[in-house]
Length: 129
Image 1 (cartoon, helix red, strand yellow):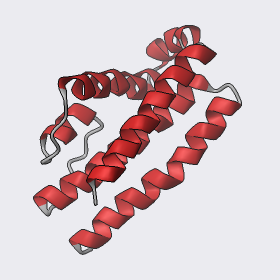
Image 2 (cartoon, one colour):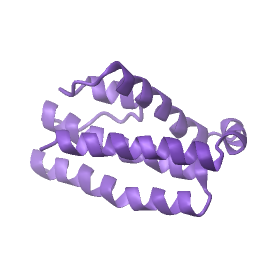
Image 3 (tube, helix red, strand yellow):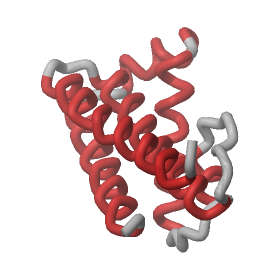
Image 4 (tube, helix red, strand yellow):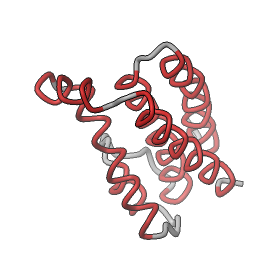
């Protein structure tokens, strides 16, 4: 697959996942909403990785490591947020973390953090042009 096709692939699947996360939030599935939100950002960062390295992205879910391997200039606040979003990937996957996440992720928490995920998504999208 050519570089531009790979970039388009990652963007397309990220954009397909965003409404899924929105639906999960609306239906009260907060852990899964934030997990899918993580995947949206991961896929966008993989598009940047492909663009900046002209290679397939590494098989990692670590948003900070992915971002560091691109030419993106992230603020320290953005890096801290990506670090936080990394937790949503872990907490949705592993039973011992999931139980605690179900308790901690209230509607307010999910709305606040998913809003920030969408803001990061919008910023990433603007940087890819």
